[in-house]
Length: 478
Image (cartoon, rainbow, N blue to C red; front, side, top):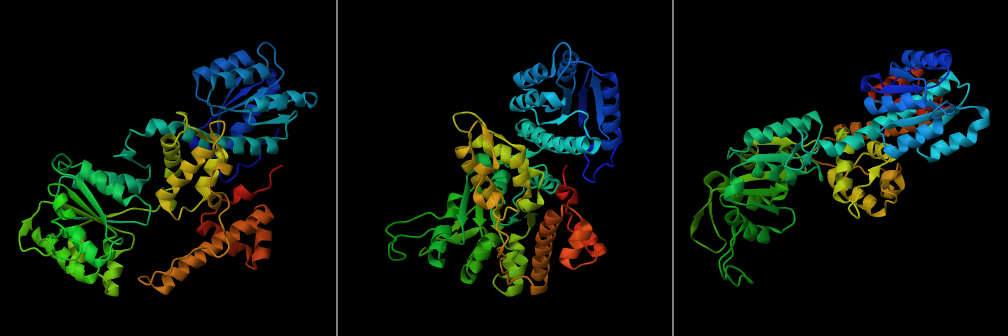
């Protein structure tokens, strides 16, 4: 066997180990040499099924390649025993031309795939690469539940993203201060969860509640009454005195969601409360003092609103004492399997938590998540309800996730940002979609992709690198 050149997305950095179970010494040695040279993987060998099973129980292997015809514990019994013990290892079987039926039986018992002897070296390596990728995704999903209480979580917020872990650290640093905090992030990124985490991490959680209000959901007259309360008869329908959100949050925390939508007239009154920590109810004359920690949130950069004249600059500086910028889910790809497993556990049916198939994880990782974590949670709730056999498959996900529309993609026009800036983002997004489609048609062939696109081979190569497109995923498979 001759080693083929490793693909650009080969996985030696994952430290995955392979076990080869083969009774013929020469075949065993050649397989070990091929996989070590081609894939950079650690490869151990066993000469029969009994030895292979013992090594699997004692070691940590991602993939096992086994012959089906061996003395003692043969390949079928070996595969059956792995399946019975539910060992977390992917199985590939080798079989002679006359034993295809046995290989199919092995796949029904859980084997990933089979190859007939003598196995073509390139085909074998491509198959092993694919199997290792899927094993890595499965291992990730299987280990997620064990991570829910480690450093990657704060007050039920889960993340392995470095930016999010810095936010977790910041929460601990600012929790005991009384400074106003501004949380910026797209819709669905979990701004209220961060606010509640800050409140729960502070001593205020023992002295007062966290009270939330969505400033965009109420007209100006109702918003004023909701924030400051009102006296009896202060306006039509005010049948009695009512305490507002500021009063209800005394000694605790007030969360002002979508603070950028507060009307200009209300901004003056809000600024006064932030400065003086006192106010009067609507229709009242009594000045009420409060001890409230204010956390504001917005899905639009407030600095842009100041520039456009829709937000007072002095209010902006009052709100922007400590800023937390939440990244969107598309910039946190390492969190997608983590969150998917968490929501699968949360919405499990009949007490059983369904597993995510490798194909499902691939779909989740390739989707852009415009609705962020909120959209992810809704998708996983639907998947848990429709899943069968305790496995979530791509068909269980909402249609827009499995087959995202590429025509007329949604692109929000934000007048607080320049046209040039937004055109650049739109162009980049279109280039990525175009190149991925061209690479799919040409099976990863850069030269043919250049012919389709009308660009030079060098330009296509540069754009593939610029956008971080993994070309190996489009290569032809034998």
